[in-house]
Image 1 (tube, rainbow, N blue to C red):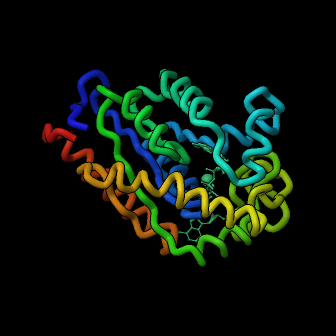
Image 2 (image 1 turned 90 degrees about the vertical axis):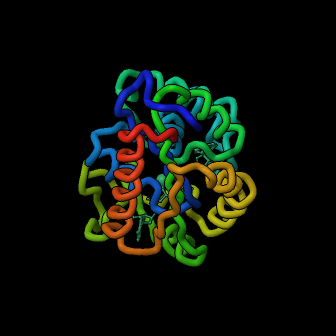
Length: 229
Ligand code: AP5
Ligand code: MG
């Protein structure tokens, strides 16, 4: 982008890219914890809106349940509002946004002058994605992905474990198609930037996290040396 960290010194802005089931949410949560950054997951924001029955939830429900993408204008407005909150000034981890070239262009405008945008593309073969989503359980109360050792209840809040409404096999196939058509072009959109990294997500979570950390440290170090990112 060529933007240095002028207005927001030290800010690290992260985008987790990747298909459904790649582990974006899992890695975003770890990154948010270790780097003390807010995790901004558009899927979580929308699911919460559906659960609480807000206007946004009403608009998004059917689209999400069909595995399609919610409209760009609404998503851009949600993210812009969130990024303008004080806790995002020192950086953020975006999970699930952007998902279209229109959203990516809007994000570039939002972060201009706010430090580098580190884009991590988590790559996992399709058969592994399908398997992961077919077996995933989430907490019906707080939305956390269930850890393997949790049997019927959430280890964080005690809520009942359920299947995510869009994890049925037909909807997963639709989500993968939508990803290929609308989101994968973002890899090309970002690939030429020095802060873009491809991460092999088909390994145990700790190994994926090690690569995510290394990519972030490299970007931070380059920014510290004044390299235009
Ligand atoms: P969203 O919630 O973002 O869903 P998604 O992109 O389809 O991705 P998932 O959350 O299913 O997977 P993930 O990559 O986060 O993987 P996770 O870490 O959970 O979006 C849902 C819907 O909201 C969209 O379909 C759309 O309708 C709407 N939406 C959201 N954002 C939008 C936007 N910007 N524009 C328009 N519409 C939008 O891991 C998956 C499973 O694998 C878990 O069980 C986990 O424990 C396991 N796992 C994770 N890592 C590993 C590993 N390394 N090895 C083995 N298992 C692993
Ligand atoms: Mg997720």
